[in-house]
Image (tube, rainbow, N blue to C red; front, side):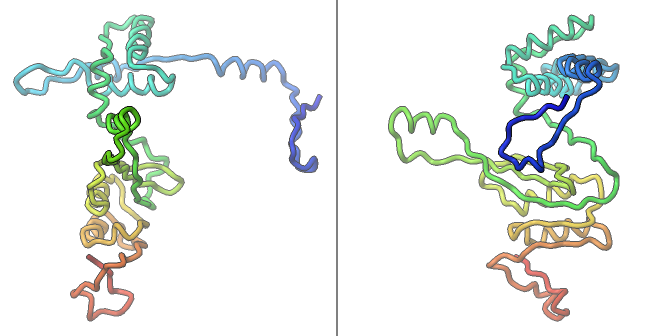
Length: 251
């Protein structure tokens, strides 16, 4: 039996679905709601951080514990208190002798915890694209404007800098204030890479000498660089006597 759905697409291009293995199909639908969560031995051993060796109180939970709780929160769309209860229930069901980070700790540590980059799908050189985007902050200033009619509130922004590999894979990232220079943050992102760069693409904000110097350090011998010059760019004195294709527009 063929199942069809009403569509404005030309009947010639409608997709026809014919289900013959109903038993397997229904089982696959049930498995979508089957959730299995476990902590491996490395996660259990790394739940509590080692002593820092500094005077004063020590942290009770490692970054791994905080990231685990925050990841579960993001996956299941939970509030902080609900996340605390959910993690506690998982630990109790697995019979583990681990403490649960409270919601206050999760809120405080979420601002500073370092999120490790995901494992790349390939091990070859990177084909990197770097850019930044603005994120508007809506907080007390926006509330004052709506509540009291304050019209001259200074807008606040954050800048999200991303380094994306071929296929849209994020390899480096940084969240900064709105005043940070793209070129300076770009150098720091390049220094964080764990693989050579085969090609680099960016806009004119990254047309600076430190960027080219960083690409000399992390790039392959045949690196392909494409950065348009800024409107205020000038010729580098060191390259004025070279051929036209060797002259770099620098700041």
